[in-house]
Length: 253
Image (cartoon, rainbow, N blue to C red; front, side, top):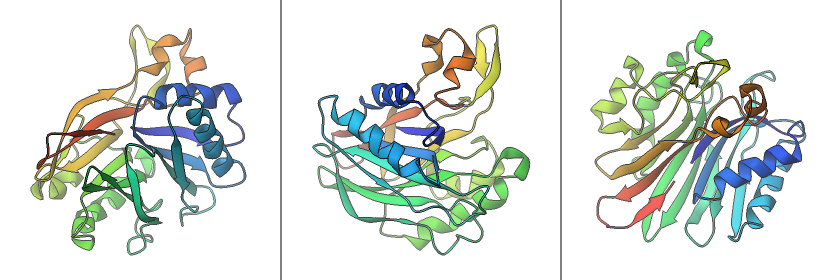
């Protein structure tokens, strides 16, 4: 599961973290974007993990250092996972080589599932008006930078999958889990239409894995108003199952 949790930090109420846990507990690996860089961000992730550990499974987590972007834009990323399902391999890291070209550089973590390794690259692009394609264009260099890794790019790209900036990845065999799936919340619904933009996605190497049961979770539907739902986040989470080409097993994301 990937979720932009919009400024997860000390400002998030305990009930909000409990709600995020109630959604997240069904999945095995969680990638979170927009963790507050300052005081309260890492603590909120620890609190979320504690909530998840009360749901019947054992969870662990890692939180990145703040990204190298300006003070206004910097944030942290986080990964959380069920320890009985997947194993973390080595230490996670923030992208170094392209940190100056990518405002909030991706945060990588490698996991092992039933003998198969995969590396999630957690990412939150600059806003649409800042032209995220100007930094996403460097993603075409990342598979060659990490040739031994099975890279899966997850997060908030602030850019639809149809944009030509993704064409180099497509030519390498990458595909997006979602097509024409809006994931950000409007300020208010227009009838049943509550979603604004096609921003969040999962990009995977289709020569190595396939993704099944991709789903966007419309959590806002259980709230009386969209304003109440936006207290959780202004994005909806996205999920998928990873199927490795050489096995018949799945690893829910």
